[in-house]
Image (tube, rainbow, N blue to C red; front, side, top):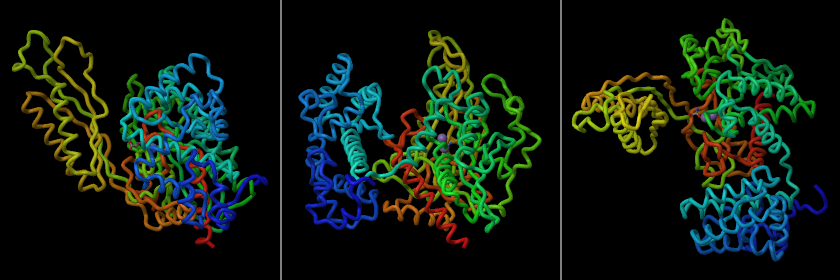
Length: 594
Ligand code: HGY
Ligand code: MN
Ligand code: MN
C-alpha cells in the first residue's frame, strides 16, 4: 500500500465530507452516488462498497441514471480533443489508445458515437480499461460500439450503467491500491489457454476445443505445466484424458477435497466456461506453495477432458469416468470425419484398458466443489460478482430426424408433400411453447440440418437435436414426455417417419447443504450479498453428485452473462473474489478438520 492510497479503515472512520473527498471522481461528475453509499458505513470490503454504490444507482430515478450517463464524455470525443476530460477519463482513454487514433479510426468512432447518441439519447459507455484493467484494443472498442448500436434501449441503458460501475471499480482499485494479482493470474492463464483451438475454427479466430483433437491435447499439456509451475506435487493425464493435479496435505486428514471443471469447449465458445473452475483453485495452490503451507487435507484439481459432448455424443465423459459411468459403447461412436472414439483415444496414447481403474472411491474424498461462470444474466443484472448455486437443473438430450419424401419444389402441390423440415419446424414451435408454459423449464433445438438440401427440392430428411431442462426430474420428465408425444403426432399427421435417440439424461443435482453453506460463509466473508440460484447449465458437479457431496460457486459473466459464445467474459476483479472465496472455503475446512 503506497502513501497515496487510502484504506477502508480511513473511509469508515472519516467524516462524511472527508470520505466523499477520498472517493471523489469514482463516478464521472456524480459525487451523489458515493455520498449516498457512504451513509451505509462501515464497509467490510471494497466489494461491499462497490455493490452499495451500484444499488444507489439501480434504485435512483431514471432521470438521475440518464444524467449520470450524460455526465460521461464520448470516447475519442470533443472533450478528448479539447483536453477537457477529467484526469481519470484522460488516463482511461489514453490507456486504450484512443488518444492515438488514426484519422479513419477517429472518423469511425465519431460517426458511431453520433449514431448511438441519436438512437439512445445518452453517450455510448464502455469501460475501456477492459476486463483485465489494462485497456481494451481500439478494434475491440469499435466492434463493441458497432454491436451495441443495435441493442434494445432498455438493455443499453442498463449496460451503460454496468460499464459505469466497472469504471468506478477500476478507479476504486487505483485509489486503494487494491491487489487483484491472483485474479489477473487466473485471467492470464485462461487467455494463454485460449490460443489453442481446432484448426478449422482457429482460422476464423474462433475457440473450439473438442475431445482429443490436437488442440485439446495441447491444452491438456498446458494445464499440466501450469499445475506443476503453480506447485502441484504431481500432475498426470488419466485414461480418458483428464488432467489431475495433486497438492498433498500435511497428512492430518486422509481424505482429499476434489475440485475442478472441464477444458473442452463448444464450437466457437468462450474462454471461461469450465476453465475458470480449474484455474481458480490453482491460484489457491499457487499461494499455498509460495507460502510453503500445507492443508490438513490434500487437494485434487481436475481439468475434465470432455463435458460438452461436441465431437462425440458422450457428455460429462471426463467426470463420468471418475464416477464409474464411462459407457464402453461410446468407444464405437464415430465423429463427423468417421474417426471412432477408440481410435481417437489410441491416437492420444490413452490406455483404454485402464478406464475402469480411474473410478474414484467416495470414501477417499471430503467432497467436490466447482467454480464456474454463471452462463446467464442474473448476477450481471444484480451487479453481484458471485452467486451460490442451490441445485443444477435436470436435463435430457436427444438427436433425431424426420423423414419424408424429397421432391420437386416447383411441381409438387402443397397438399401432396411430406416435407421433413416443416415437420421439425412445427415441433420446434411446440418445444418453445411447452417449455415456456412451465416458467422455469427450457427447451432448445440447437442442431437443425437438411442433409444435401437444395433450394428447389422439398426436404425429404431433416436432422435435429433436443435439449430439455427443468429444476426437477419430475418436471423434466413431463416436458420430455409431452415433446416426444407431440413429435410422434406431428410425424403421423404429416406422413413423416420419426427417429429419435436419447443421448443424455442427467438428474437434478441439489447442492449438499453443508457445502453450500461453506460457499455462503465464504461469500459473506467478502462482504458480497448472498444470492442463491439454480444452475440452468449442466456441470461436472452433477456427475460427481452421484458419489460425493457437492456445491458450486458462480462467477458473474459480462455482456449479460452470455456464454457458449465468444462474447463470454468475466473480469479479473471477479476472478480475484472467486479465488478469495475459495481460500475461505479451504480455511473453513481446515478449521473443521483441526
Ligand atoms: O450444456 C450445458 O449445460 C453445459 O455447458 N455443458
Ligand atoms: Mn458449456
Ligand atoms: Mn461448463
